[in-house]
Length: 114
Length: 117
Image 1 (tube, chains in turn green, purple):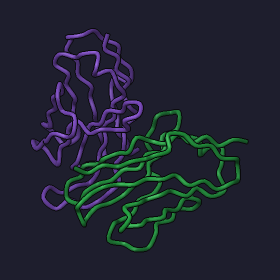
Image 2: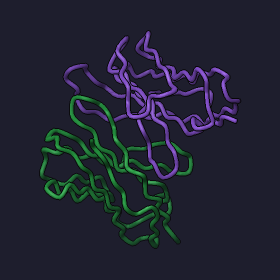
Image 3: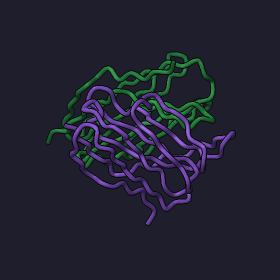
Image 4: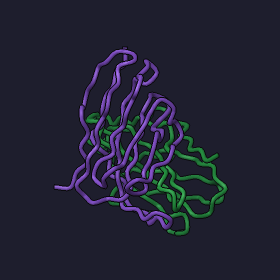
């Protein structure tokens, strides 16, 4: 069975600093995709960044980047220059190709402090 | 405006009273799915549909039913709700071709907060 684990239930960071959220996953599949979703207090699920497993290059979206270690099955999210608006719960998610099925981690609540 | 809508947004009901949560999308997406979110468990998939008339169970389908009679709608039915179905429910959609799924972003609805007393 595929699983996604986020071992940090809560984290905090000072505004303008950098923070890294951890995620590990377990699968025997070779074709899959990884995502980070943000859920602010509004509860809306917002896609932050995605990574195709077959791509070795780490994905980057503005202040957000990932460290994808395929052999270690690790997919961490780095947020640079943290902003107050980054305060949210962050979910790591995994999808096997050709299924559309998303498997989520437990979530990490991030608080950005002024 | 491209969107996924869910109704109702909030619902308090009693054990055993049948209810339906609607999900509708205007993006012509093939794929639709339902998730429930519970503290400490993240989101778990209930049911999904690759296209019209095709549905399949997710990880936690017990106590739920779905139907996909038309592309834009994917209602979630609780025939006899129980307190353990108290949760936050999300509908999500994306492009998807049955048998040859092409990755694309999943768009989530605003969520439905359900409380079963």
